Image 1 (tube, helix red, strand yellow):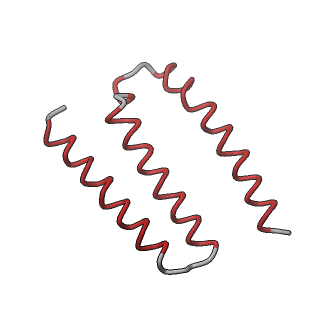
Image 2 (cartoon, one colour):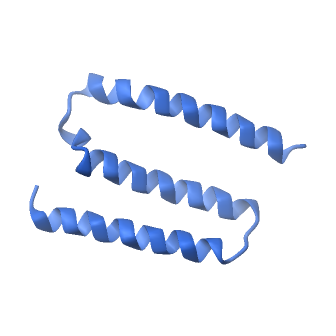
Image 3 (cartoon, one colour):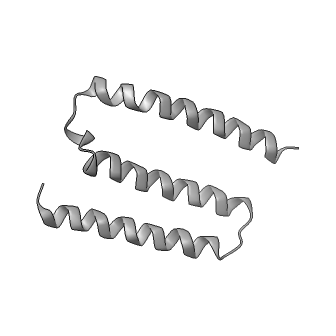
Length: 86
């Protein structure tokens, strides 16, 4: 990848961080948390794919990396559902 592509991804991460801060100031209640988590997921995906070079790895390695992440996300999601409906 060229240096320009890395700078573009870095700029996208900066913009997404700014959007996260802006949304946090809107006081949207639960929607604020969901939006922040969605933006964090996009940022994490960009870092994993481009800066950690997972875009060029074998599919088995990617599955081994994402299986624990999906498990953790499921546990956290179920915790959120439990807290929201109390």
